[in-house]
Amino acid sequence: MLHKQFDFLVIGSGLAGLYSAFEASQYGSVAIVTKSKIDVSNSYYAQGGIAAVTNSNDYPQLHLQDTLTAGRGLCDYTPVDILVNEGPERIKDLIDLGMQFDTEDGELSLALEGGHHRRRVLHAGGDSTGKELVKFLIQKVLNTSSIKIFENQMVYELLVEEQQCFGAKSFNPNENSNLCIHAKSTILTLGGASAVYQRTTNPETTVGDGIALAYNAGAEITDMEFIQFHPSSFYSQGGHTFLISEAVRGEGAHLLNSKGERFMSKIHELAELAPRDIVARSIFNEMQKFGDNYVTLSLKHLNGEKLKKRFPSIYAKCKESGADFLDKIPIAPAAHYTVGGVKTDNNGKTNINNLYACGELASTGVMGANRLASNSLLECLVFGKRAIQHAQKQTNFTPSNSNQIGISVNDDLSDLFLNHVNAIAIAMNTKVGIVRTAQHLQEVLNLLDEIKSTFPFKTNEYYSIRMQNLISVCSLVTTAALARKESRGGHYREDFNTENEDFLAHSVQQLNKELTFVPVEIKSE
Image 1 (cartoon, rainbow, N blue to C red):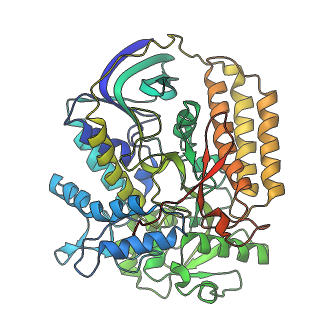
Image 2 (cartoon, rainbow, N blue to C red; image 1 turned 135 degrees about the vertical axis):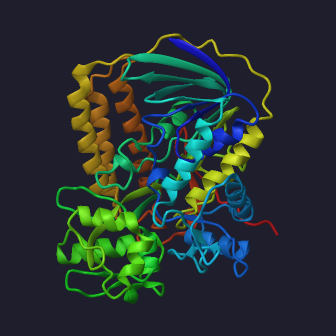
Image 3 (tube, helix red, strand yellow; image 1 turned 45 degrees about the horizontal axis):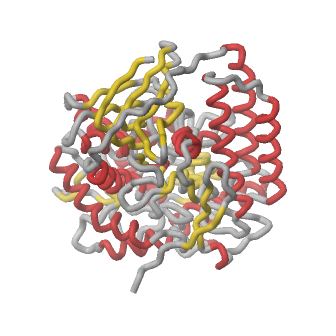
């Protein structure tokens, strides 16, 4: 096993990871360890943009109000207040570094997205904001000599002793090699868990292994029942899908059922721009009502030339997939964003010393029961900065004496592993999806238990670790969904279909402990 030592270890290479690593490079040596290549992440696929107050007719207080409204009573007040007030400063930092957002007549071009009452969503490259941001930061990272990148690494264990983290162990399956990195501070930025679902907008690597890592190390995990389903994901019979940005509806696109009727205007005052959970559930209901696999997004009443310019990559992808972007696009909801995750304080710190979490896998208290569109990229910046500012004060460091045993691959387990992955993905999609019931949730827990008891787990083995992590993540989501006997935000129970004030609380899960609920932090007068 190869041993390395750094001041900071950043695990993951999405926006949160790249930004944290770049920020940390001012204070010492940094290792970025990433699961595939440095440019494969959810951030890279984020089309819509980044929400922040940059306009004189908008105010942080309004952004705060929109965030709290979307969060359905489960946002913690202080982190939201931090997000909306520090967000504009982080945007200014990026622009000062040379990041170019789209402009119109010399001013920043601002889009409107669901749940926002002002145009405040900055974008870059039209509909490829995440990609442009990630590309920009990758260049910064590659040009920084104090940052070293380790690709194709599966991090399988955090080095934790007496509630203190000293780094992590990882395995490169391509080279069959083991790596141990010791660090003063470790920052988890591995993204969410939506790729455990059969229909997802996420890259297939996004299966929540960062959440499993933290959970196995004893970190608190909160609000895992809240999975955000993006209402408009391209539908094709073969299962090929990609995101049709919320901003397309922001420009005036209509949702039509198979009878050609527009249905959202009867359901919510904001019609197609209602919060995502409402739009996704309404689409699901229309599909159920008529026995359809999809609804259509109609753009033919809009200015085609303007749309082509604003959404060049979506236009190209639709064309490639045989659909006419300027007419009607077949869409259906897909798992998109993990609202809950590893519980952190306002400095991104977990309950384990020297261990931080940032980005989608973190649960900062900002998102509540349902993330407001385009707040996620902003959260990466605001809490990435805060995590590093806190972490760089760590000076005491004793490298861990953890066991030196690495892991290896047993190829005989590969087919069985993949069969189980597919079975779990289908079960999650049909039974822990947009609409849930106690019976369905229990059936999924039974399936996970059955796999757990029959899979031929081997110690220190690649597929065994991945199987264990997948079971953990899906159990966390399903157990929390079963415990929350109400419907709120991204969690909808057909058997408890209204909000219940008794559940104005965060679900908390920790290894070898029963699930508990803790109160939401409200504004102190």
